[in-house]
Image 1 (cartoon, rainbow, N blue to C red):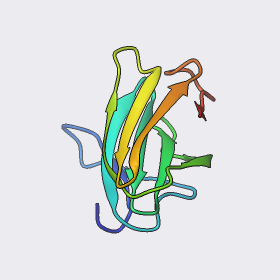
Image 2: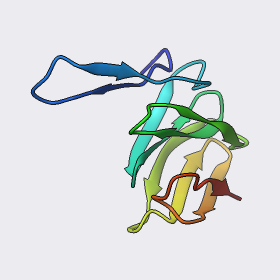
Image 3: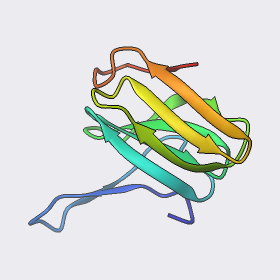
Image 4: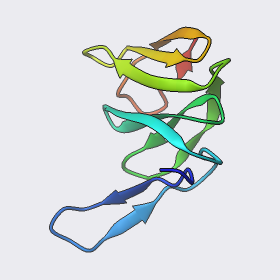
Length: 105
């Protein structure tokens, strides 16, 4: 998404839901589903989380220190690696896939 908007669509239906709360103000570079959340990195140089059920952005964002180029999530979702223009950021997530689980650096 070049405008930072994230939408969820239900297959077999015309229903859709737009992300609520503070998301990326500009382009989303990469995203991954981990448990009941979608993780996104964007050109605002942050890693953000959104609840898939509520489609609500978490209030916290992790500064990446450089423009993200892509990300990968290890099996189990507890480790996220984001490649940025300045290097790699490795994030260990506490209790990935549980409500309220956030990034820790």
